[in-house]
Figure 1 (spheres, rainbow, N blue to C red):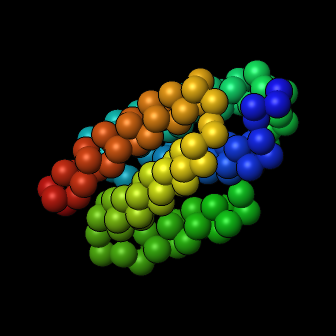
Figure 2 (cartoon, one colour; figure 1 turned 90 degrees about the horizontal axis):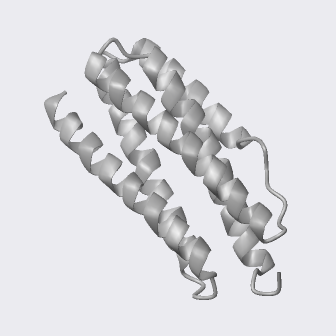
Length: 149
């Protein structure tokens, strides 16, 4: 469609890729904690990101855009670093929480950048704003959990 620019498609594909990465990261975090509370939080976030991936793919397809089916190489390196760091950390859960907070803040910035152009179709804007709000809510919860660890 004409109202979909390459820039918007690129932003959405970047966000799609990051959500795939986040989903994998949250699933790994489930495996790296013994805390039932954190496991539940990470599982919920992984499921949420899976839903985001499905929604973004559908949005891209609706506008005739191609989408990526995998995460980024840099995220694989980051997840590996998180695993390595947790091996040597005296407080694994705290390290994971810090990394998740950092990742979620970065995700919010990427959503903000995607919404900046002002030429985003209404359906795309609503989708991104809804997902951004869920990430913000999750980040707020995550930050309150960090205070407990």
